[in-house]
Length: 387
Ligand SMILES: [Zn+2]
Ligand SMILES: [Zn+2]
Image (tube, rainbow, N blue to C red):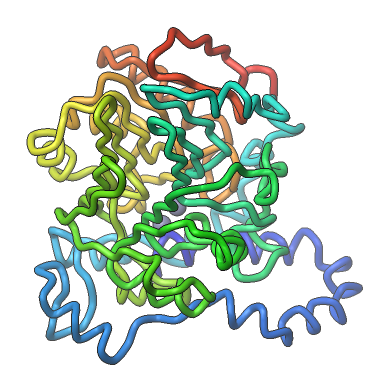
């Protein structure tokens, strides 16, 4: 069993125990939810047939087992040996109430779209929580791992977000490109994807994700699917699909779609987005081949020693930024969903400590704050206002 499925399971079991009575009262609602076609639609469409056979060209696809693999092919098997029933027991016996903030996180709401959209030679971004980022890269709008739904799970009573996003899908300015790192629910959200069905937005995705997107109504000609180390250029911006150490699947660990990090290289700024990843030598390799980076957004939350192969520990995330030759780092994959056992604010506190020790400049924007990479931005310790 993997971290995603374990986390979903412990979240679900915890929910059942804490809310058994109300859950019984809600049974008719739940039955109707489960019987609606939406849950099946949420699972997406795992690639098969011709699409799957085309992956034969990818050096990361194992023809024998028909799955994508990490650099160390058996790294997930080793991790799974550590994940067992004790984890569920620990979840129930732990009394920590700090996995979720006790009140809404401070935010800039509404964000200043006027300042964000003003013509620029630089790059601006707004962090919308977890790994969702809205960017203005020299006047092209890029949305990374958009998750606007209430929950990061196939049913909306599981893995609920801490608070609504500072912008709704309808409030977004016209998006030129959507970039997806992998098909887990906290990165690939069906409702957010379907919003772009009738728009002109183009999608850049790792191999296999195209199958989910076309199933949800996105025309195939608007989707560019890439293997690690391949790239596509749109209007002067290079989108380079780069490695990550993780896994994939919306129904467990199918591994039939690829997981990735991304480099977005425009004439004036170079950005790295880690997707989900454990610490490995790929950071150094990407830094050597494509660095230095003006800024690196790195997976710094939802970690645990037992699944450190697929999510950096905060100290490793800072080291990753150094390996990448990034000038600045922003911790992401935190502060919106409870997918691990740590306190909600631990990722940012540990990242800050590690950045201080290792000499990395850490940017810590509030939700909704417009950050301009060409300017001196002000950051406050907003997490200290919430327990
Ligand atoms: Zn993931
Ligand atoms: Zn994730």
